[in-house]
Image 1 (tube, one colour):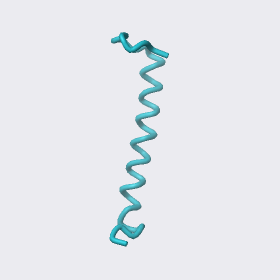
Image 2 (cartoon, rainbow, N blue to C red):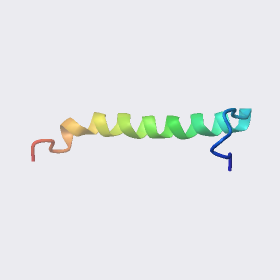
Image 3 (cartoon, one colour):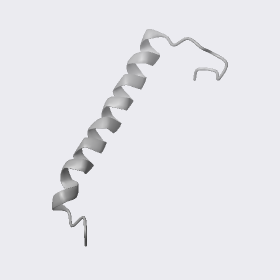
Image 4 (cartoon, rainbow, N blue to C red):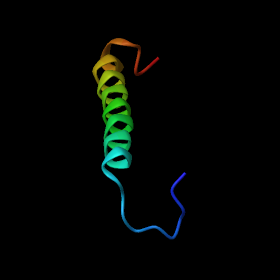
Length: 42
């Protein structure tokens, strides 16, 4: 685990963060897409 005092990311760390961020972004896009059809005003 990278220490909190570290201000630099290794290439591996950057790739991991990017992958996690992309996953969360996809989840958000899916939720937004499904909102109008999932009974938003129910």
